[in-house]
Image (tube, rainbow, N blue to C red; front, top):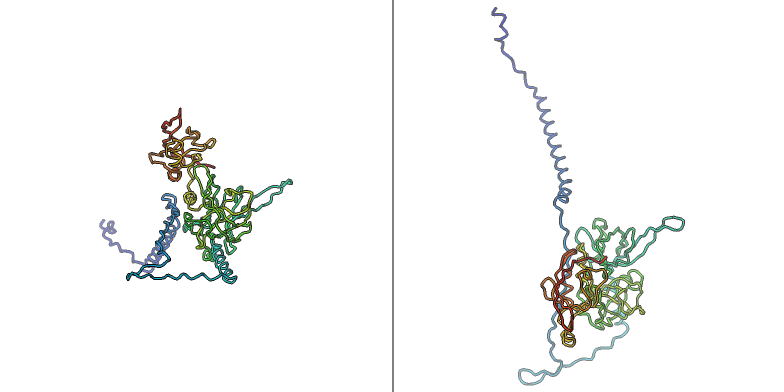
Length: 423
C-alpha cells in the first residue's frame, strides 16, 4: 500500500538552464529594442513637424518697411571773411571748380551705371503663362513678361513686388533671376486700388548659387526727393528687361487722388516705354519710387513717372504679410487752414467723391462731407485718415464723425461703416 503512494515522496528535479539559448534571447530582445527605438525616433522626427504644423501652426515672420528718419542738416558757416579771436579777419579763399571734361563725365556715367548693374541683383523678370485655345480648339501657350523687385526674404520664401496687370489671367507665373534661374511663383496678395501685387517664391525652389547672387532691395525714403536730383530707372523702363536709364527728377509736387489715399508722383526727363515697369533708385541704390505708368499724369508723353515709395510702404507691408488692404471708397482732400477760413468749413478731411457700391456709399457718406474723427481719433489731414484706415482690418466696423452742410451751416453726424476690400 505504501508503494502505491511512492510518487508522492519523489523529488522533482529543475530543468537545467540553457545558457546559449538564454543569451540568444537576450541578444534578440536587445536588437528588437534598438530597432523599436530607432523606428520610434524616426517616426517622431518625421511626424513631429507635421503634427506641430497642424496643431500649433507657426505664424509667418512679419515683414516691416521702416521709413528712415530725415537727417538734420548741420548749419554751414558763412563762406566769407570771418572774424578771429584777436579781432582780425580771416580771408576764406574759394577756388573755382575745375571744368569737367569728357573723360571725367564718362567716369561719372560709368559710376551711375555701376549702381544700376548692382540693382540688377534685386530685379527679376515675371513671366505670365496663359493657356489659350484657337479656332480649331487647339490649346497653346502665350507669355507676357514684366519686371519685379525682390523686397523681402522671410527665410522660407522670397517676396516680389510687381503689378497685377503683369500677371492678369495667368495660368502659371514664373520668375527669372539675374543669373537666369527660373522658378515657379504664386500670387500672394494684390491691391485693387493701386494695382500693385506681391508674389511669393519658396526659398527651397531657388538654387543655392542663385541665392548667393541675388539681393533684397532697400526701400528708401522719398520724402527728401527734389527737382534736379539724379536718379536711375531699373527693371524694364524702355520695355526691355534689365535696361537702365539715368536722368533727373523734373517734378516732385504732382499728386494723384485715388480711393482712400493720395499719392505723390515723381516725373522725370527719362524717355521710356508706355508699358514701362520697375523702379526709380537714387545714387545709393535705394528705391525711391515705383514705376506705375497708369498713374502718369502726362499720358501723351513717354517720360517716366513713379509713385513715391514712402507713401506706398503701408500698402506693400500689408500685402507682404498676406493681409488685405482696407477699403471704404472715399476720394479725399485735406481742408487746410486757408480753405477752412475762406469757405467757412470745419477742419478735417473733405470728401470729394464716393465710389459706387462702396462701403462708404452703403453707410451713407456724401460728397461734401468733412470727416473729423475715426474711432474717436482726430482727423486733421488726409494722412491721418489714410493711417487710421490702414490700421483696420477687413470686416471691421469703423465709427466715423463727420460734418455735413445743411441750410448754410454744418451739422455733426455719427456714421458706422463696415470696412471692405477693393477687388
